[in-house]
Amino acid sequence: MRIRHWNWKRLISAMLCTAAAASLILSAASPVSADDKLDELLKQKQEYQKQLEEINQQISDNEANRADAEEQKELLQQQQSVITSQINLITSQKNDVNQQIADKQAEIDQKQADIDAKQADIDQRWEDFKLRMKAMQQLNDGGSIALLSAATNLYELLSFQQTLEDIYTKDEEVLAELDAEYDDLNNQKQELENDKADLESNLATLSDLGDQLDSKNAELQSSIQQQDATISQAEALAQSLTEEQKKIQAAATEAENAYDSYLQSQIKQYGTSVKIHCSLDFINPLNSYKYISCYFGDGGHGGTDFAAPGGTDIHAMADGVVTNATYHYSYGYYVMIYHGTADDGNSYATLYAHMNSQPLVSVGQTVSKGQLIGHVGTTGNSTGNHLHLEMRVNGSRVSVLPYISY
Image 1 (spheres, rainbow, N blue to C red):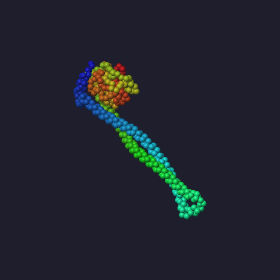
Image 2: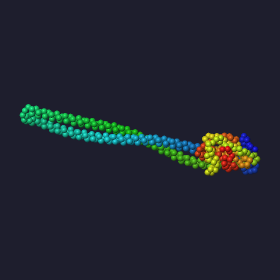
Image 3: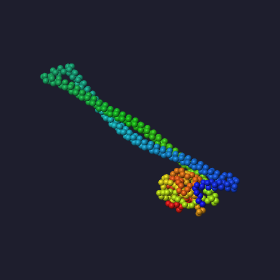
Image 4: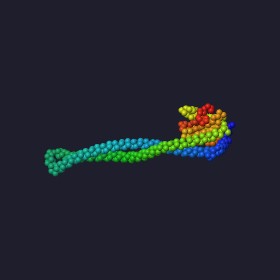
């Protein structure tokens, strides 16, 4: 007899009540009813699931923090690379200016040497001029009369006077030229010193800019170190959370198995009086898929993987009751449906794993063949969007392909 999905929950309740009554009659030492036992197992399962969801959220938040730190570090490193290039450019410019200052100083030193030499020449000329002036003064004081009296004619007398005037005039011209040359050298030196002062001002500006860039670079390096510390802390926390996740997952899996085993034992125990019939009329849970990415038994694989786009609808393969609808570290979000016993005497169940989010059905809910139960995803231990599909006969995994069209 085939049980319709709308009275399945009442059937289970009636069966569990019958179990409770039988248990009370047969064993007074067992005061807990089947319903209470099932509720207790369900609460344990839900509590572990809650803990698992909380730690998964912590892992997700921690990973987001680590990713943010990695992103910030990358941005800071990019800024630091730009700053380093600017520092290198400033350093090169400072070296060029320092060389120009050194060259300019060499020119100033050479110009000062030229000025000193010119001053020595002027001093010597001045000394010679003073000697001539002294000699001419002596001539004027008396010696000139003897020279004039020695002149034999007016021409000699006028020539002598002109010669003295020419010597005086020439000395004045030479001294004037030397003074002009001296002034010109000093002007050139002043221009060189002005150029050097401009270069030193440019160097000071470059040095200030270099100091600012060095300060900014130090800030960036400090920020990078802080991000490294954040990343290290996140990695350490991730490892700790992962270990805690494994412990909670193991406990959650044990609670899920206990709940599933108890539920199926109750169904089997009272299935002799009211059978849950499985017609074996299974359908492919996916209306379409890309290809089969992994077959049952490949490398010990316990199911068949159907590669499909994320979000593809997943349908129940046959009528049944949901025994699991939760998250598992390996299955990710998954659903398990018990389909009852077929005419061959075997019980059948199917499992649908790696859904993209919380399943659309809940534990204890009856489902009909073709009902939407979730969507293809890549949660849990998965490397891409696909449906991991299992067929269980009498609790043992077998290939699902003989039961469906594909």
